[in-house]
Figure 1: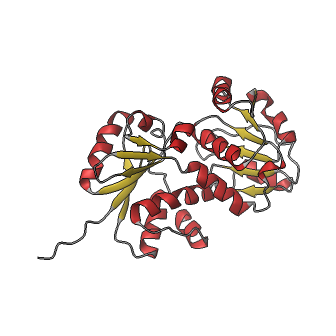
Figure 2 (figure 1 turned 30 degrees about the horizontal axis):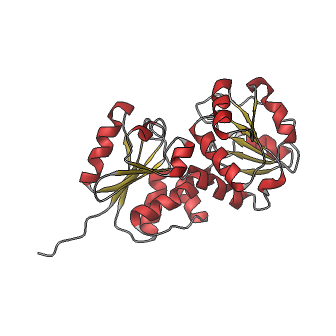
Length: 278
C-alpha cells in the first residue's frame, strides 16, 4: 500500500476566537493554490496554552497563530524566539520544528508596515513624528517597525501612563509620552496617526481622543477592522486625510506564516480582502 503524505495542519489560538477572520483567509489561500492543508480556530485558555502547544506537533500541526491573550504568555516557554519577537516582547506566529520544538516569531510589525505602504504609498517615514495611541502588544510591534523604518520620533499615549513609560524606557529617547487626556495635542505635530487600542471596535468603548489637530497631509491608520471604517477613519476622511484600515495588517502579517507552514508565499490582493470579509 502506498503511504500518503501527511496533510499539514495550522490554526489560530485565542480566547475568544470565534471572531477571527484568519481561518477564512488561510482557507482561501489553501484553495487558491491547491494545497492540501487545513487551518483551524481553537479556543484555548491561558492555563492550558503550553500543554496544548506541546501536543499539537504530535497531531500533525506545523504551526499556529496566537492572538489575545496569548502573545506575551508564549514567550515564557517557547524553545526558540527570534530577535524580533524578543524586542517586541510578544509572538503571534509559531513554527513547530520536526523535533517538536516551538519557534516563536512576530510578524505583526511586518504586516503593519506592508499595509501602510499599500494604503499610503506616498508615506515617507522620515517626514515627521508618528503619534501612537495605546501601549499594548500591538503597539510594541508598531513602534518597533516604525523606528526600523526611519520614523524620527514616536509620540505615545496610553490610558494607563505607566505602560507608555515602560515602552519609553525600553525604546529610548525617540519615544515621547503624553497623558491620555492630552493625547489630542500630540496629533498636531504628527505626520502619521496610529490607533493600536481596541477602542472603536464593535463591542468596545469609543475612542474619544480629539482629532481636530489633523491636517490633510496626515496619514491615519486604525488597527481595528471591525468595523472596517471606524469613526476615527471616517473623521480623518472629513479632514481630507489618507486613511488606511486595519484589515490589511491582518492580511499581510499572515503572508510569512503561510509561506513557512505550507511552502508557498501567498499574494494579498482584492480576492484576499474579499475572502477575509466574507
